Length: 610
Image 1 (tube, rainbow, N blue to C red):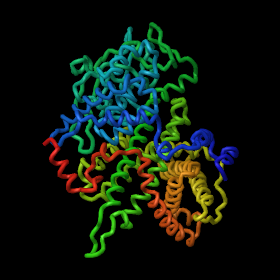
Image 2 (cartoon, helix red, strand yellow; image 1 turned 180 degrees about the horizontal axis):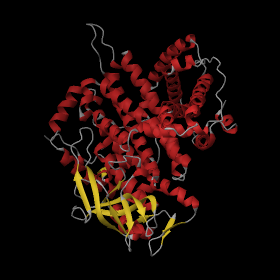
Image 3 (cartoon, helix red, strand yellow; image 1 turned 180 degrees about the vertical axis):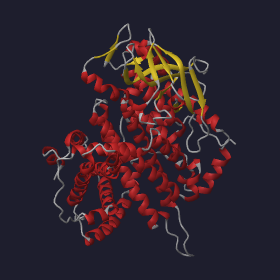
Image 4 (cartoon, helix red, strand yellow; image 1 turned 90 degrees about the horizontal axis):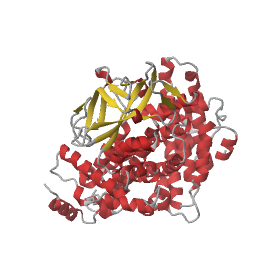
């Protein structure tokens, strides 16, 4: 059954309609190059970022401490703001914002936590959730980089379940005062430890003049003054060293921090009168209030997913180029290339297929997101699914690249090891990534409640159409198996459904990624990726398909053979595919990319600033 038939028959609910429309928009235009397909946004923006992010003034040296690297990152952020123009313009131009994340992840990993807070969470919120006059006193400082932005959400007591936060913003006659009522309500880990001027967006419970708790809202405040000192009512304690990523995380508490009336980011959903009494515009506005608070998180989830995919592509580019030229002496006469060794070849090429599939899928979601209502539940769930599908695979891919490169993978000069820290920061930045996957999977299961799975009949994995049907069958079967746990709000069932919800989230995204690859299969390289992606997925879940009567033992065994041939075909297309990543050996500067590895390391060591 085609996606069009699925949509007409209502087999995917609202999410299907969203993504089916997205698929139609993303069909390859005649003459579109492979590079254009894998790149999102303007090539000029990408080229500008490559140049800006390789400025030698901000090179990381072997001698720098964590503290020095943090300070260096802030200087580089200000330079980047000067190069790109106003922060709010970048934050609201999503293709440009995603490109900033992508190239920072590849070329300047220390920047990733800073651009997330400054561009996306602070500048993006101020530019979209309040009127220009109210935003202006704060946004002008963010726009030129004279102040650095961030968002304060998570607390000791609630973690990322921010609906349960305890920080309060109470009406005091002219505006609001922010208070931390107890130690567990302190904001835990926003990056505001370095003493630089700060404009931050802070989430707190709005208590109006009538004493009514209206839930979580966003407020803007200066956390540090022009000298970098904490403002009155703010206490900041910097947290300790992190071994994987350079961040200046801190614990923050408030004691009657004054917040101006106009600093409330209402998104036009409510008003507050001179007595401090809040009135909702309508009942729908009340329901949209919390999604409004988290709207820039939706953008951020996709931006971080995009940058991890970008890092995974760079890691594969480096590892595969190295493996394709590295001879492995096995006997006195046998010196195969590292890429011809099965455990290297199979691992890296299946990772490559999965990464390209997620790149095409992620680009489609990014295109959809640019024109979407960020408070719409379908938009939120679509991005939650994408985050879970993309980010965990990126971590696995980069880990495999680092391991397969052996000792060469240990050094920052070869970049791959540093990508691991970005992955860990993104995946755990708002709690365990599986939390979002399980929530999104649960919502999807509810939407598919009335759609029974197909009758179990045997399929032929050698048939591309049967492969697509097998992925669809897995989605609908898992959704059906989850239903008994969705009929009750009991905690036991909410916990018991999580494995099915996670499997459903992954299966749903895999199905759509395969559909997108098929749409673009006029590129022989994408057709090769599609076959490896689909066959590897079926092989991974062979036991599931066997026990559900969708393949037999003969087909399961044949899948492995088909996968072997598909990997060989992908290997034939490898040079063209890596070229389409639009990476530059000189800009990456990794010694392992050199034909003369010893000379490259000699040069690196002689140039390093010890």
